[in-house]
Amino acid sequence: MRVLVTGGGGFLGSYIVDALLRRGDAVRVAGRRSHPRIDALGVETAVGDLSDPKAASAAAKGCEAVIHAAGAPGISIAEDIYRRANVIATLNMLAAARERGVRRFVYTGTASVVYAGRSIEGGDESLPYPEHYLSVYARTKAEAERAVIAANSGHLATCVIRPHLIFGPRDTQLIPKLLARARTGRMRRIGDGTNRVSVSYVGNVADAHCLALDALSPGGPAAGQVYFVNEPEPVNCWEFINRIVAGAGFPQVAKKLPLWLANLAGWMLENAYPLLGRKSDPPFTRFLVSQLATSHWFRVDKARAELGWEPEVSLDQGVRLLLDSLNQGQIT
Image 1 (cartoon, rainbow, N blue to C red):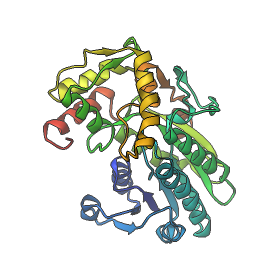
Image 2: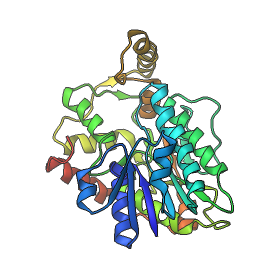
Image 3: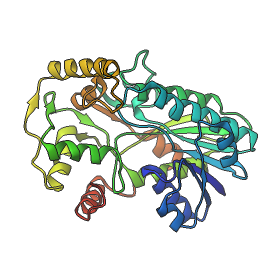
């Protein structure tokens, strides 16, 4: 099968490319620039901005399937960045898939599309979208996800994989930002420290995308479906953070910040940054605060039953692989 992987030079995308190549699939990557690692694998890169319909169409030409893993993550409050990367690019890729006769379309979503700031314990795919979101990221990912599900048809089978808090070697987002805060001593525990969360080892998430691709066919079991994919058992949020921080050689997070004060700081920063013309991400947002203080973990029964997914790498193995990469200087 010839598969286009958008964002294939990124963190998760690069693992998806590796998994597809191991299976013997032909792969093309689409992104804003080429990546030496992808080039070294002999994989073609279609360079372009997917918010441009022509770039999306050119990338999909000749492909039988699309895994759309490209997008803008994070806690930024810049509406235009997320709308262009998460919504417009997804709509363009769906249009390109229809134009080019692509039959299968797997979208990398996020568990955050069902999160409204309150604890979720053992959530499943029946959870509704909230009326209001605490972040532009979650809102735009939800809009894109809905478009992907609505696009499912007898000609184009679509589905969504919803990972949560992806970690592992090659990470450019979650772990580097966590360690940057730990390095400067700016980390504070928010909440009572008992909240549990789902985390996802990156290789396991990549495998789920491949299985979804196999299960996708018009009228097949995965067509029009969404799947939570994360480690089956939740972790204590702050114990997990401290395990990684300590493993990277930094002091564990011991200082606390009252939840009310953290929320106030998030609200003030969200409002002050646009007024001051600041382009960088604020250090605190209400979304980040709520993520650190509440429980949000999800069941993976549906992915197991319908995709045949099982994590090949255990949580402990994943953490060891991550810490090994940190000690080798692969993540800074």
